[in-house]
Image (cartoon, rainbow, N blue to C red; front, top):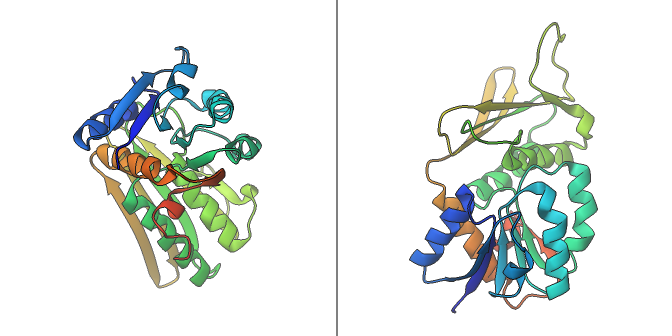
Length: 245
């Protein structure tokens, strides 16, 4: 199947990686724009729009996608849970895949984390550690945020259970908190570890990315999956058939 795409956020690292991967895979880049450019240009060309721009632009991107009836892949991160919840009704008006990470390996990590969190009780302390390059602007990463969301859902905990690093006299760790630690430095593409630590044993699930092209290839796979689908909001678990894993 031939596929043409438009890229929003084309001058960013991911936008450039997607353009390169598209060329290698025989996919046409019909338009390439950035925040500050006339965004409507991206929605007037191509079969699917892929957005890796800036979280503040997501509402405009979704509005244009709905206006033009264009399938949309969203890879932008940095939204608060409240922001994402407010934007979901817009996303449901079109065929849309919205994920914090488009790596196949990371999405398997999501499925494994869900299984571990459901099997291991509160006597297994859950912590998430992520590391990215020094240029990343948001923390925690979108991938880490999704891992935390999975753990909170499985353990029926609220956002107030999260502990973003620890400092000072914090007291003993409780069984109802979930730690999140964001490291930044160098040119690290993305490392994520989910740790379940109990007395006597520890389980660690780790994914390390060394090439940004894995995310680009996943985003293109999501774009191809959207073609011909009706309105609805999906993530990479749907694209990969991991929803029931």
